[in-house]
Each structure stands twice: as C-alpha cells, then as structure tokens.
Length: 169
Image (cartoon, rainbow, N blue to C red):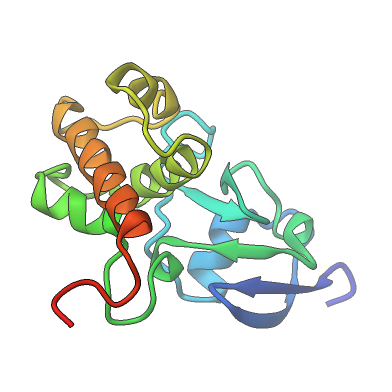
C-alpha cells in the first residue's frame, strides 16, 4: 500500500476516490477499478483508438494516460456520453447508419467523433476522415462510420436550431 497513490476523479459526473499504483493506466482504472468496460483495451500503444475517452473535455487515448494524471480531473466515457436511458446522437447515428460491425472500435470512434463535432459541428467527409485517422476499424471499411458522423452532425445542428417547445407540443 505504501507505493499506491490516492486520486480523486470525477467520471461521468460521479466523484471517485481510489488508491492506485502510480503506473496504472487510465484505461485499466476505468475498466478494472470502476467497472466501466465500455472503454476498450486494444493495442496498448495508442495506435488503434479503441480506448478514447474525454479527459477535462478533450479526447485522449486512455492507454497513454496514467490514472494519477487524471487526479482532480473529469473523465467522460462512452457510458456517460448521454443521460442514462438515452442515446447520444452519435450513438443513435452509429446504430441507424450501420457504423459498426463487431463493435470493438465503436466506443473509441464515438468518443473521437464527439470531440470532432465539438470542434467542427459541420465537417466535410474529408474532415471526418482526418478527424478519425487515429482510430482503427478492422471490420467496416469506414464508409458507414463517416455516414454516421455526418448524420449525427445534421441531427445535432437541427436540435440546436429547433425552437424551444417545438416537436409537437
């Protein structure tokens, strides 16, 4: 216990206090300590992007961040992207536009796409491909992933421009 470090991290809006080894990766903290298994361990070398989460509002590959580096920070995982019981527009779009096959890369793709749309709400196909180039999918061929991000961008823009009280009220 002497070489463990005390950390406090807010994950998906809930504060957690933990004792961790200084070398524990954030991805392992999320999966093994907090039991948030939506963040996947892929390559452990930052090449595949399956482990992307948001740390203090920015997309990071959690296999390259130590849990102690997140101390005092806020982390959002795929489980916390949308309010409980609902889907984020990106999650809905990946489902509706068949942006996944095996689903292994999907959480990282969605989290990276959320960062992309935060920075560029109306990206071109080329901008989407550039924004996701740090994420590898071995199943889909990427075309439906790009379509899903485009669809989500359209939906998110429409939601922002929809007048309050609209939608059949």
